[in-house]
Amino acid sequence: MEHISDSQKELRRDILDYAWTEFIRLGLKKVKVDDISSHFSISKRTLYEMFEDKETLIVECFRHRFDAKHKEVELIHRETTLSLETYVRLFAERIKESENVNPVFFSEAFKYPKLMRFFEETTEERNSRAMEVIQKCVNDGYLIPDFNYPMLLEAYGAQFMSIVKLELYKKYKLSDMLNTLQIISFRGCCTEKGLEMLDRIIEKTKST
Image 1: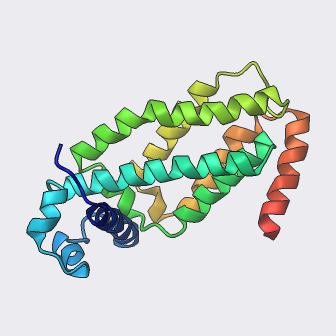
Image 2: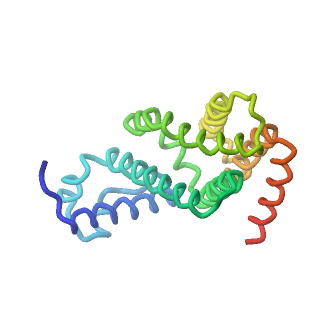
């Protein structure tokens, strides 16, 4: 394998961070490879030496973000001993992020086969990570034990896909729809202890 210098690794990370910011701000289609290479004062050839084509760059942006989110989850786990607080904090961050995303960003994603394959390949891992938090909530008495949570995660994913495909974000705020879906699906699985704790955490989150 060809050796990659630290400066090349740093440039690659910077490109992924910048491209991701532009993709969620403008949408996948409007961001041009020329714009990205110009921003970093490099040639398109240099950019294509790191990323085969624009679609590969898009996929790598998602992969980079996927890995970064995993590290954030681990940090939250270390910062709190409350399983339910971990879950709420993760969800609150997701809602906050969605408020800054251009809605076409999601609809345009369906036009990239490599990206769709990436979503399919990482679905199991995403759900597995979510199940770790959910199982801890169950063990701590915040969620009811006798429920098919893997099915719930798949249903939630399907609902989100429907929102994008039906372009409901043109009628309603994406963050509001995500929040509504989450409340409906999650609160129904809470124990009395979980509901009391959930309300306290949500109020705490609102005040910070």
